[in-house]
Image (cartoon, rainbow, N blue to C red; front, side, top):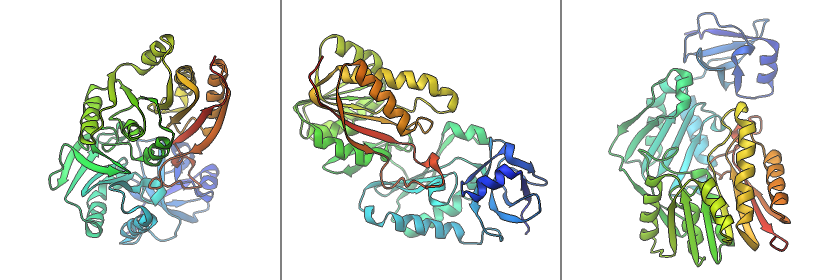
Length: 391
């Protein structure tokens, strides 16, 4: 069957040639006969075929490029893409909790698959891969030992595609909690209700690295269920984990008990208020961990996000002990590393701190970055040491 054809304006053609996988609605010249979620042929104004992709009539991202081939995607293409994704992760196949497929970065737009032990949690965020969900899940089940499959299709971005927000079991029985190992600790992920698909897998390597700096007193701000804090508690005298979510903190307490960690305190509070109160009280910590949610989910959010990141880093520096280490992260794509570093530099100056950059880090290896797709590099992490006297 011939695919419907989409014709691009020159700007869209240039974007496609640059190998960026997104084409925006403003760059589509015509879309005759294409329906929402269709695989379409992508053409320039001369009628030359440039590739094929998933079409959306609802989102500002009108096309998600699948191939740059003349012919439509062949049967078995996505199974081969899954094989390639698993091969890329062969070196980390022993991670009990890991991302198996990272959407465009693995050549399957709008599809995410995470494995927690033997329980698979998937997400589709566009109509095109929503139609292929059965095929994609089937391919993964053929290749891996999987006891259950859960579709965590409750991401707000689905609204932009006109898709229902829902959490739906696909196969087997997914537990409310799945206990997985990470380094020397074990934690319980929440695939049904937790953030993302149940845990923040992208910070795995940063959690392990930050634990190398743990000693004395540690503060984990925006702790969620305590993943950073659990690692730090192995070496620290005392760890304080602060989050606004009572449910996440309850899981954190369960995780601490399961790991035999008795030096952890969990505090339910607004992190901004808590940091300010601790600074005013003169508290000091040898390691401060800042892992806030995305403050800038769109370009319009950036000015407010700058103020938010400045505030938490300023407060973080003010509770950092002399010679201490501050680990600060941003998962906002619209805030790049250069801008984040400038904000943190200003916060350090306002706090009267001289700071050395120990490391610039990013997302874990199971979240690969596609060079032509800068949106895939969203997580930034700075490891900083106070190099001067406290104010």
